[in-house]
Amino acid sequence: MGRVTRRTFALAALSGMSAFTATGATASQGRPERRGAATTEMRGMWLATVANRDFPSRSGMTAAAQRAELIAWLDLAVRDRLNTVVFQVRPTADALWPSPHEPWSQVLTGTQGKSPGWDPLGTAVAEAHARGLQLHAWFNPYRIANSDDPTKLVASHPARKHPDWVVPYGGKLFYNPGLPAVRSFVQDAILDAVQKYPVDAVHFDDYFYPYPVAGQTFDDDAEYDAYGGGFATRADWRRDNIDTLVREIAARIKAVRPGTGFGISPFGVWRNASTDPRGSDTKAFQSYDEIYADSRRWVKEGWLDYVVPQLYWEIGNSAADYAKLVPWWAEVVKGTGTRLYLGEGLYKAGASGQPAAWGKKEELSKHLTLAKTYPEVRGHVFFGGQDVELDRIGAMAKVVADHYGQPVQPPS
Image (cartoon, rainbow, N blue to C red; front, side):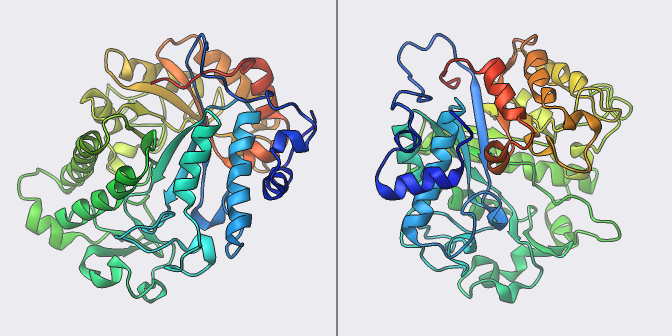
């Protein structure tokens, strides 16, 4: 069938029809069938809510319209023979479910703390499972707001009740990872969702300590003085703060709901080989040193069920070559219990200002072809939802045509 937009799906959902029936397709087309699937492979899509990137398309829609739009995204995943949606449910220290710890997200109604009149996460889990999809709940641990004005937060916000937890940096507000109270609170906020809903996994993105902003300092002097005495450097202490969060929440997820996985999507470069012989043959930003994310250790220690490095570069990139990073990550996971999926920068395909390779619809399909030569690679996750929908130059359609001939189950 022709290109089907999210609006078509949403209108069909509001009218009570299945989206496939609305577009003249049979009910069996595109629906993953778990029974009898011969192989497993991650075929995922990130669905971002921060700043209304993907969902909801704007704040203030009616509950019925929001629900229909969410269902349309799930139907889109089914149509493209994906099997997993990674749904951002805690974009900025707020919630897309009724949380006792944090306010309702502003992205839903336009007003932080205001109930949208329905439960997006609960609906997403139920409707995803009804379609044979996995639903991974995506949480951002430390970002509070994309503004540095705390008075813009609802009065009941934990960041206003605990201003000592907050660090302004780069025009934004962050929880301080160096405080044990913050670490405990963040975990409690996340685990509330795990306790309430049978999510298939908890998912973190690449934001831990904030990405560096020139000329600004992340002020954690007092916390380092109080808690950093056992570490040789502040960088070592900061990495340990993140390591501790990862280790602790991994254990708590398994205690609360043993069948729920835990995965992280780190920046695609851990360290460059010129800095550390264990690093990759790259000349790029080093997440170990700049945002204190020791993603290699998380894999080696067995804290993660899966890792999805964001390999948002083309094959042949001079600073970070996709073809060099895939074997590096394959070697990192080898012999561990951590599954390797690759994060794919679909958002670059056909976008202005990108290297020439991204103007060719074949680039992403070539990524999957290359990755198949490494048995450690168990699948791919595409960023993001609106790019799967728009598919500007047909890059996603080519991936589906070349690689997703039959629906398969995600690895478990």
